[in-house]
Amino acid sequence: MIHIGPLDLEKKAAVVAVILENPLETSKKAAEMGADLLEIRLDLLGIKDLEIAAETIRKIKSETKLPVILTNRSNTEGGKWEGKEAERIGLLTNLLSLEAGPDAVDIELSAGREARDQIIKAAKTCGKTVIISSHDFLKTPAFQEMKITFEEAFLAGADIVKLAVMPHSMKDVLNLLRATLDAREAGGTVCAIAMGKLGKHTRVIAPFYGSVLTYASVEGTVPAAPGQFQVDEVKKIMELLE
Image (tube, helix red, strand yellow):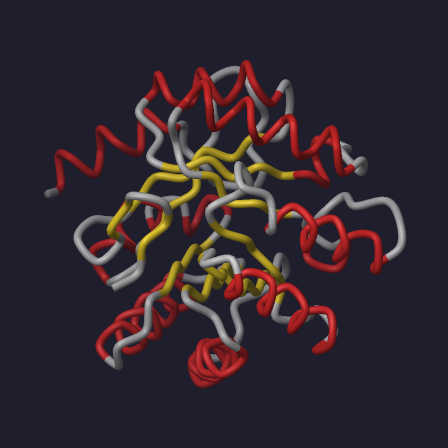
């Protein structure tokens, strides 16, 4: 069973609100809108200092009572981190060990093996959930390539594998959903997203094919990725489809 904080992701997909500005205020608004989880994007918030990051997370968890995914996205996968790679990894590692720290961490499959293993070891030691992610903002890889990505990330130590791709046809979208369903039926816990206009519906449909997380924006903020709905919109549509 995969849990993030008190959430049992085997029972129901969780709506993740992406926090990328005014962290405390935006997190409170996300909670009011019905978010199940918060993704704290350190790279988009421009937070590099350990103490500021720790206090921000502590306040958010205290005020919202929601579990937190910690993300410090690399530039190669659409992030805005400015600094050395060792600093990016070090910040994530140090925050994982805090008592009032995050409940899960997201690290890219493309991160160097040593850096990735450092994050995974720290997370596992502290009982945190590991999300290993892969983003392709240009295309949708071939069906077999997506299956291999899922497999590689699980072998690397992922509790959840997140795959986000850019479709150029509805066949691309179908291939992603098929790879997602195959991964779930094989016993893996996955999150799948087709970005942009063509893939927008996957943010509410993919959970029916086995995706356990769907990412959404908060009212008044710019979406972190193309095609995101707002938190309340996702919740409403998913409830209608259940």
